[in-house]
Picture 1: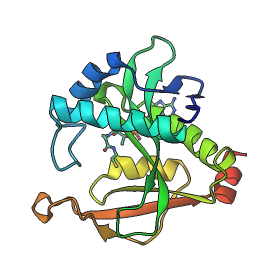
Picture 2: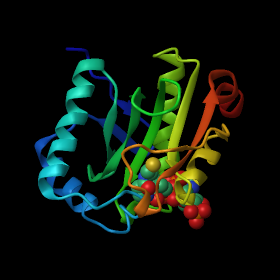
Picture 3: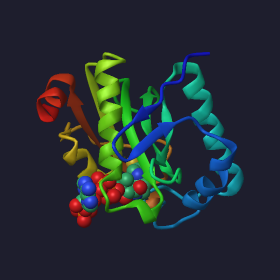
Picture 4: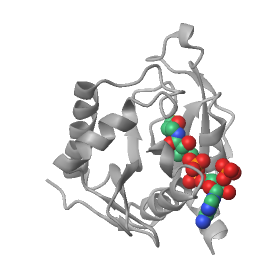
Length: 186
Ligand SMILES: CC(C)(COP(=O)(O)OP(=O)(O)OC[C@H]1O[C@@H](n2cnc3c(N)ncnc32)[C@H](O)[C@@H]1OP(=O)(O)O)[C@@H](O)C(=O)NCCC(=O)NCCS
């Protein structure tokens, strides 16, 4: 078991999963607006399973998909974090990802949290590069990638776990290297 890192930004805390997160996480995963670019919304059991998978990875590695909590009132806002990708038709890599409850969109929270994850990836984990992946239709998510200084790697691929009938199969890969991240933040 690894020491689980916790990250903090001016407005947010990225922390481990707790029992009290399960209810707001299930509500978020059942929201059609939040899940517009996923194959389907998630039921309560699927949501619980996902949270325990994320917590297990945090305990194994010390990093992963953290809960995003609002510092001012402790509210559960969603998830953000890093994930090793080795099961997609792209080179093995570490991705940064995010999913926020709708009420927290439009305030810069995803970018603020993801920037802290990139900082952690490049300084603590000493990675050379981090990617972000989403369906080509998810422009809002791609806007976060661009705000982070990431660029389209030109490596679109069809996601093997997404049925063609959903219209969400083609995915885009954005990436950023350590040097560029350090230049954009200094
Ligand atoms: C993708 C997602 C995280 C983007 O959230 P977001 O709130 O649009 O992104 P940010 O946190 O970067 O916020 C940027 C917006 O906040 C605004 N903003 C307001 N106050 C701000 C502040 N203090 N600092 C920075 N931006 C601020 C920006 O102007 C921008 O507004 P705009 O969208 O009108 O241009 C969110 O839509 C989501 O959770 N979607 C569902 C899940 C999903 O699709 N995840 C990705 C799957 S791969």
